[in-house]
Image (cartoon, rainbow, N blue to C red):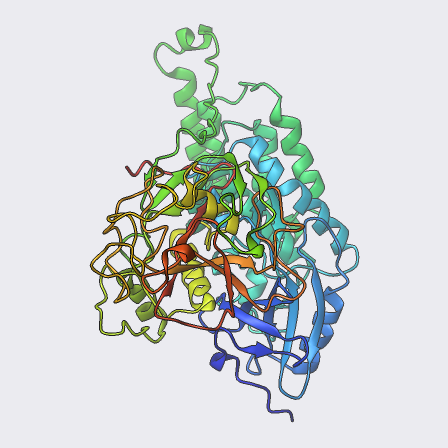
Length: 583
């Protein structure tokens, strides 16, 4: 029997696979470190490592190869697994956007029909098509569906079907079909259909409905759907396998047909009350149910002033459309709460723009050329300050990581130092999980625009350094050439950002390139086939002023650490982002 590597001992920055073209572990996606985001040649992948206590290695490999054949636009691609005497893992593409759990937070009382259809239409088509080949997802829940540009995409398709038993580590137990609770777990196409219907109902009514008993707690009508359609959805959501829909496309077709259909108004409150009681108590004594139903009907018929009620014109139910928040309506400054308490770093809203990127003052190196125009079509948030020891230490303690040394200068509000690019990426991943938003390192485009603040000079405040504006070697501060200074100790630029020149140089998301030849002309992460080094920008307390210019860029291997390197973070503004006003 092969002695495979213990996945619980994997570490950020570790190389796995083959030596010539290894995957470099970026950050874990679960507490047990069985699933990781990794880089290979500048491209991100999701790696799922074999777990000996979950099943057999032959079954793992057969399952991974089988599901690598699944191809559909609503499914993130799976690739053939990797197998050696040391490593066994499956591989799939990374999906962007936000997971369905986070997305539904914008609609606590249920999403509009057009949003529901947009989310589930392509998923329904994919499942119906793939089910014809006797393949199924197996762990469909709020985390395995991501929302990208308003469309739902399924991740990890079939990834856990090799396991002897899918448990709470692999799937939200609120979505378990009854057959998952049996001693010998049964997983079939019908299991996907059960989870699909529960997710659909949760999107129509709000995610919190999953915490309730579907047999007794679902409402007897829905304000956006006709009674016939809603009753059909309720029937399809029952636990029995015989009740589950045979075609998920048909489910979405019925909802779409109701999208522009006016309310029938033919379902009276009395009838709704009777039907609800019957549905909730159908297993009780029929005689008692019949007596109660008769009483309710009689009350409705003989109630005083019933004639006046009948003659009243039907009251149209006004459904208020959810207005999508505009960029201008989002708060200028934001501090998002963390699940574990406290808040994320304070972030500043940066508007869309077009600017010239690169050395415009003939003061730089060849890697800052050619100067080129870049468009930032969508705004973003970037942290006002460099990430501090206080902020990073909270993350490190909660995730069991070693605290980076502070060189005896103090921690607290000083920028965190002695952290690698992988450390910074792990922090942004944790921050994303803690806030249900998407945080990452800045792109080089985002960082340079934020530093320039609409200037075309070497620094945002001019072509030469001035006291009170930067911390660097000979910039005029008390920390020059000695140590970092507390964040925000110098003047902010016109965008409200501090320490963009000096204090610590900052890790960037992009791969390093020797020049701007072929650089993107719109804001995006610039990757490469071989991504051995990452970009660092901004200069530091240790560097001469020239190194801290807006255009300066230099390379560093992502696993290196230094006392003059730190980072700041970007918070992506998603489509349909509905952020509460912070400041």
